[in-house]
Length: 321
Image (cartoon, rainbow, N blue to C red; front, top):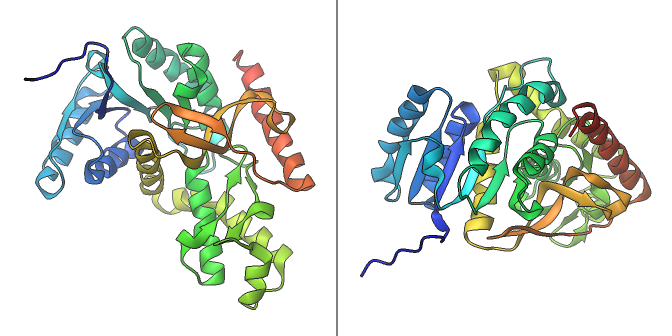
């Protein structure tokens, strides 16, 4: 006998709003992941969504059974996750913060369409500037804050691990380190809490005959911060890395993993910061963000974190958010 639950969340259903490079790459990554059995693609250009759905569907026989189709907001019913990638993309010479006004206006058209429906799942914000738009989505939706999270610095932290792993010639998966603050130019590499399988970063560096810690840290942080600009200058857009970060966040939610990921969410006094969304480590599970995880920061890192928060808070105030 088939069971029907009127108000149940279908954890095997995901919706992606925005079928540009990031949305399409995320859809492809999620198709290959096997996490979901139903995926709805929504875009202002319906034919674009139909084309992406058809293209990705042709590879389903190489992955897991999945229904992928172009839809509209009436199709979000019972979805566990809505991933919003819609918005103007960052162009060469632009910062993520340059996209603020354009993408806030786009969100003012998207979020009300979602709240008209009986959506009970998690909103995952991916569009840039992600910290600002996470706060915008939370305010416009009125949803509980744990249900509205941004992709934050999950990708930036992966980039940091990649650069540290390269520097030390060790498996990136053995590197434990976070980028915190803004997903953007004021981001902070939290080196003081970084470790390689439990060994303090500086100690491990010396094991590998690296002794110029300050210079190496500055160079690694610079590479991470400029990664997106470099990629955009070479291929006009970034999308594979963020698509894999989206998949990782979805895994934590759908599998209720209680994983610690540096997502963007509202701050309420942690490190003396409140009334702004920042990218900080948090426990992520089926209900979204459970709680922030306080990591040890040195005085300089904490000061830079507060400066990052002030930059974002100023932009929120300028845009009446």
